[in-house]
Amino acid sequence: MQIEERLKELKDKINDKVPHGINVTQVEFEGPELVIYTDDPKRFADEADLIKILARDLRKRIVVRPTILEDPEKAYNEIKAVVPETGGITDIFFDADTGEVLIEAEKPGVVIGKNGTTLREITKHIGWTPKVVRTPPIESSTVKQVRQYLRSANEERKQFLRTIGRRIHRDLPARDETTKRDQWARVTTLGCCREVGRAAFLLTTPNSKVLIDCGEKPDNQGGTPYLYVPEIQPLTGLDAVVLTHAHLDHCALIPLLYKYGYEGPVYSTPPTRDLSVMLQLDYLDVINKEGRKIPYSSNEVKTYIRHSITLNYGSVTDIAPDVKLTFHNAGHILGSAIAHFHLGDGMYNIAFTGDFNYAKSRLFNPAVNQFPRLEALFMESTYGGSNDFQQPRSEAEDRLYETINTVIQRGGKVIIPAFSVGRSQEVMLALEEGMRLDKIPKVKIYLDGMIREATAIHTCYPEYLNTELRNLIFREGMNPFLAECFQQVDSQDLREKVIAGDPCVIITTSGMLNGGPVMEYLLNLAQDEKNALIFVGYQADGTYGRRIQKGWREVPMGRKGTITINLEIVTVDGFSGHSDRRQLMNYIGQISPRPEKIFCIHGDENNTIDLASSIYKRYHIQTHAPMNLETYRMV
Image 1 (tube, one colour):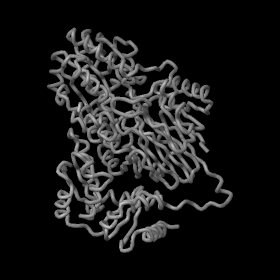
Image 2: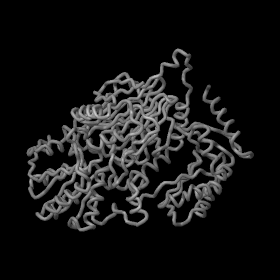
Image 3: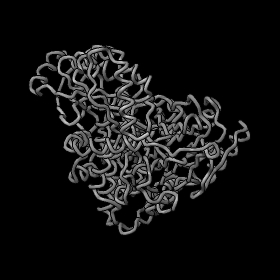
Image 4: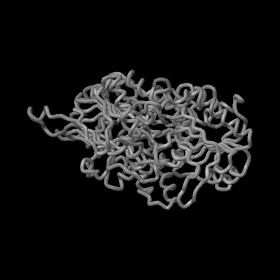
């Protein structure tokens, strides 16, 4: 059946189900959604359950848009009349190409109303399809730029979504009884096997190709995924790219795909998209300052934004003719997701954890481990070694407080290198509480690098934070990220004053000492034994962080010369966003349903092999510790 015939069939089914008098003028695939255009969106709004019924019966994500749009000025006034002032509307933008009105508000819940009642009331009054986003409590330049750019590119994006929608719902080749049984799924490892970094996996079926992640290797060696192998070439043959989270070893090279011919969508959660854009632009800036060749330009980052499609946790979405995707909370960083794929008509189910944390943290709930079906699992093994046990969070925080107290009392400074996304915010929350409860002295905590911007993005998406933190911010009115103890280092002059100034705490990027502002603090403060360097995250092989953590006292820094390390070195493991050995084993013990195959990836060679062997011995599940450039048939 051709696309036009299928759309006509869907339109007829919709007309059979909608109440008499509602005129459906057109239906169209736009990205993963089926868009219903109607002369009477207000009647649709009156039928509160109609869209749910259509979505269930047609097994599609449904969006209703008006054929005729009310004057924006009149619609603006009606929105303001319907929404209580307590909603705190800060901006209203009308997109005539999509028939959507974007409402930015300090309290989106008020604009939406209980069970969506206020949103339906808005639709009844104006006809436009309302979408609500949160006004950031801390202004984020990244979120602002992404939203503005998507507005400016709305016509191009609309055409892109229609093209993708028709590709997703294209007809599959007819199969006779002989070939019908020949159904299969394969995974090719393009990076991140027996190593940490350059995550990239190709999921292939007879009809589709999906790439999961595309990151760099964090060792200053420029390691990239094997994107030139025939299994993935040409890139125009890819149906989709799925991004699990926004750390550079998973997202850094997404824009590179567009440079080399990819034209399709990138699926992620909304915060993952925004954080990825922030980190990719910073990544280019750092490489440029270090005199290295940049792999792509900011134009490719814009192309990525234009081609991004965001999905919330739990939303089952068609991304290819025989592939459905669902994101689940991974508990690692803001918006991090376990990507669950449903292949064929119930043929096979496979999940990629990305990086995950099976323990509740100050920021997030534990990773999800309950799935409708699951035959194969690709899981990270960063701390999969038999001796990789982390401190409980409470002990880790006590160790952090103890070290800070000791260093400040002796007149020194504390340097905490941390990823701008995830670890920095965990440490910030711990330090804010420690200072508020007088567990550590009230000194300045300086934030250098992209930490403040990343924190601002966290405040845009409180629905992705754990319940306690959301309640603290919105019910009790206390946002710990806004505490007076934090100060952003936003100039070279201030950085120099911090280095020369009073005892303080400095949280700075990069987390593995492979570039960024931390290098300047290290160059100037490493020789003084009164100071301390506290590691709160994983240090990959080949990074300066791993060398110093191992005990190197003289570290060659290339053109910057050799640094003598006299300051105190402390490792506090409990802040990691990764599960340790015990949690990894417990995750498999409690996962439901239990998969038939497990692939241990994203870890040093010994760790992946050790974890795979241990899982097999304890749970009798078929396990693998794959190498790069291997292909496994799933079914």
